[in-house]
Image (tube, rainbow, N blue to C red; front, side, top):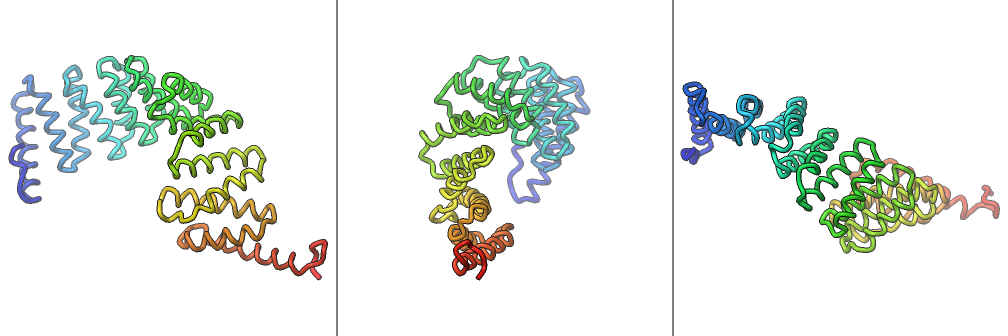
Length: 325
């Protein structure tokens, strides 16, 4: 592969030549001990050529024909990630299943990496199985932490909230200063909320408020807290929490904050209308229209502003009991 410099056309031509060389070697020397290396190199070249389907086929062949070689073992990891890229989820699932069936042969590091790929691509059942194997195949505390978090996250998305809580509690018991502390606390709060354990959910968020200095994370905690308070039926408290986010001085300076402020404003406007806080609603609507003039919620906000303006005018000019004159 030393000839892969030059223009794009030259690189493409050289990649094609390299692919032919590796294929030719395999054809001429099918039983050579260098065969697995040639197949692995061929798969890598095909990936560079963006021939993803062909690369996946090569890595699958390598895994099946040379499962006990280093290249064969690595190929399952590459096969899983490559198959996901082209939407061949059955191929990816099969590769992961074969890895977990022989977990001790691959090592916890590789299993943790493939588990993260599964999580990132919302293959939560596969992620759960992989992270369980990571836990069983290493004593390394850092890998155990990532396995417990991955297990908790996959279980949460699978709807097994009690098991998710158990895994996340185990993570924090293992290391209450883990680098995953805040992510774990947020996820733990959501899992408790889903099970109706609102005090525990608020307790998890309290730890976030207590320790973080990150403005975005604080807004996220406010948003999570407001959702819990709504589910508790504490509309006044939820309204106050949404207002803390909605009245951010300039949400447009940070895209992450802006998304939370937009969401909080919409809920605060709805709750403000329910509570007849029409002056607040008018202020919120004006701020929303200023900062989010391309939002999908524009029609909803404009309608709320019209209704709040009419109600405020009616109450200002009506009789003592609020009826029209």
